[in-house]
Amino acid sequence: MHITLYHTHPSLYRDVAQLFIDSLRNNPKTVWGLATGSTPIEIYKHLVAHYQKDAFDTRFLTTFNLDEYVGLSASSDQSYAHFMSRHLWDALNLQPNQRHIPNGLASDLVSECERYETLILEHPIHIQLLGIGSNGHIAFNEPGTPFDSKTHVVTLDSKTRMDNARFFDALHSVPHQAITMGISTIMKAQKIVLVATGQNKAKAIQAMLEGPISESCPASILRNHPNLFIYLDDKAASLLNTHLLNRG
Ligand code: F6R
Image (cartoon, rainbow, N blue to C red):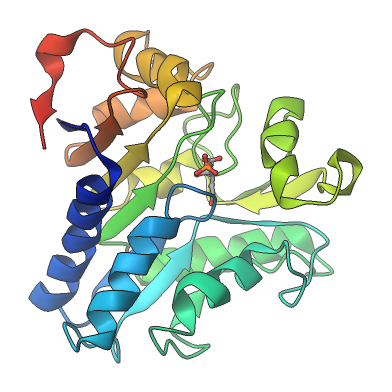
């Protein structure tokens, strides 16, 4: 496990974006695991800026997103598919067969989860980007989710719905369900990069790194991953034992 701490955000986001660029330069057929939310936005801006300067080629890139709300179409402003088109997919010229996200409108959600899990098994993820919820969730694996879970339908925690309400017109518009990669799906990625910034992540980061490895903090299982890179700002790291940390 490598933890790097930053005073300023631009260098943190630049360094994380560089990990993804390097993976693609090393292997043009690389598979990226991607996240939505506030955390990746600046990382995606760096990727787009580099792509526009011809820094890398995306023709053979494959991507998988962590999750999608149930009941929102890809054209709905709040869907994660829409978020990804707007912030990354379109600008990187990714074709529909290169970019994957669960279909939250599938008539049979269980079959959709099985389809997505199988697709990931067929295209193993080389580098997975993760944010963390203020309750320690990763993707939409809420506290209590079994560590051996695969892609599944989840009922969202009230804290997660409140955290995400900022992207909707009102709390009641936030869907109650989502499809998410499971914890075992995420753990299969060759390399995991978790990014957390801001004081509201400090408790989750402390529980993840210094608490017990327990399903009550889903992110804590990441400590068992052999190739985990954690990027934090000072606020997210403010409750940690500082001897663990390197400076970025
Ligand atoms: C997003 C996702 C979530 C977020 C987490 C943090 O695809 O799976 O787990 O990474 O909720 O969200 P932000 O970055 O908005 O704080």
